Image 1 (cartoon, rainbow over the protein chains, first blue to last red):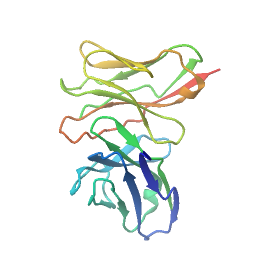
Image 2: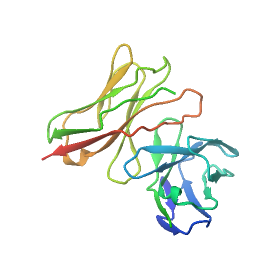
Image 3: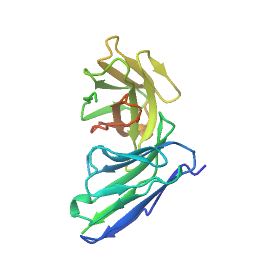
Image 4: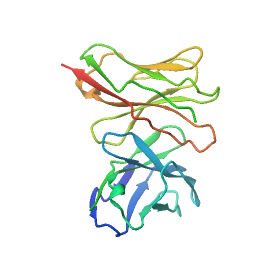
Length: 110
Length: 111
């Protein structure tokens, strides 16, 4: 099993650009999550999903959108990128207790 | 959601037990305590969780007080590779299994 994979690993965006962070898990987990981690801080929950077709907001959803059309994939969409979205983004999945995290995507918005 | 309070940082000598405290005084009767750690900039890693009884696995032990208002994670023989940020989390019971991470305890294991 590859576990949770995230692409890309690094990305630099200009203000106002959009992008999609990809997340895929091969463990057949129903629950998936997106977190962001700012330097020196803990993780903040952006969005989560309890199954295909079901998503809900976390602590810091503004500026992001998600979709969950399959069990495996949970992409995170950034519209109109802003410098405040510079962060490391982690995707995780669980079944449902223990969460398995991906390696993260380091995003810089300039 | 119940909040947790942890010390910002701790040091521990290599080979000694590392005892990491967590306060969760507003925990509800059916909320679990989870511990994760994050080594450098990697994704967090699950360590252990418990409800009211003490728990032990190959990585650590979790001691929860009888009133459940606090807990301690014990790494019995800390190694340099245990240097990490340790997060104590109380899980919501709404069925969504959301985790709310705090800022954690930065544990430094000293040679």
